[in-house]
Amino acid sequence: MLPQSDIAELEEIVGAAAIDPSQWQTFARRVREILPEVKVFMHVTDSVSERMQPALAEGIGDDFLASFISYYQELNPWTATNVLAPLMTPMWTEQNVPASTLRGSEFYEDFLRHLGESDSATGIKLLQDHERFAQLSFHYDSAQAERTHSRIEPLIRILAPTMRRSLEALRVNLTGIEHAYLGGFLQRLRYPALVLDKFGRVKAANRAMETLLDGVATIKIGRDGRLEFADGHLKTALADMTAHLSSSRGASQPQTRLPPTLKTASGSYQLAWTPMAASISHFWGVGEQWATESVILLTLNPFALSGDDQLKRLRQLYGLTPAEARICMLLSQGVSMPIAAQRQGVSYETARSHLKSIFSKIGVTRQTELVALLHRTFPGLL
Image (cartoon, rainbow, N blue to C red):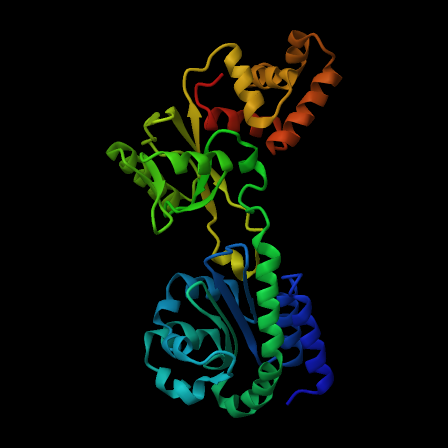
């Protein structure tokens, strides 16, 4: 058993993780300092609060982790035991699936053996219900299994209640936070907009989209969370779009684009999409390995706007002033900032001040990003 001072230190770190998720990584790192022969792995999944998914690994290389996530986790012979194991009770693989039974399997020969000194483990299941699953495990060499298990088992038995409380508290603390995808940009759009992952699942939607979805039948979110269109052409185009995102990570636009029109009882909309990098700020440790690296911003823009209506549209979408909207239009037409200032009848410094305000309201940092976003999200607008 570890010294009481070490246990107390680790319990304090786990307690702090209730409000600071980065403390889970601190915990794993400190365990490795105390027990260098141990590799630490933890993953929490939560279907209700996707922001609350701590995942960490200490002592496991990124390449091994990536291959486990992409393939070998499906071959893991410990999985069935983990699912059936009782909650809050330390588990020892040597009692259920001993290291000797792994040898010769694809999981062991192609993965575990190369990871090195990891064919035994002590772990604990902290959460399991229809919404969540959380498990922490410590991996080590089976040649030292009894000795290492005898040191870890008392530790996790003592820490388990604090770990669970921290996870429960963290869920409450983070559930009400605005979705991290694209920061607050999505909610700044006053017309319907949503974010899709490479599987076509809706990861976030603004209030305008939620209102639209409540009142129409031509577009909806299915039971599995995927976006669904009633129109067959839109279904096909959406499938092409998500397949492209999955294969190319959203690096460029595919040849097939969404048809321009979605007809609803409330009017017709032009559909435009933009591949974007998803924020992974709601993941920590190795959680980004599970995060969708590219997403699709899909916007539904009302038709029949021209002339002065275009200025009004920009103002409504982003909360711009009339002067800021005119600057946007001029820049989108390829006009330089000095010329835009001249046409507006203001000084260059005033025009630059307008541009800074535009950046802040729209959520971009460079002029090229602004122009690209306007052209991609609203093709043919300006």
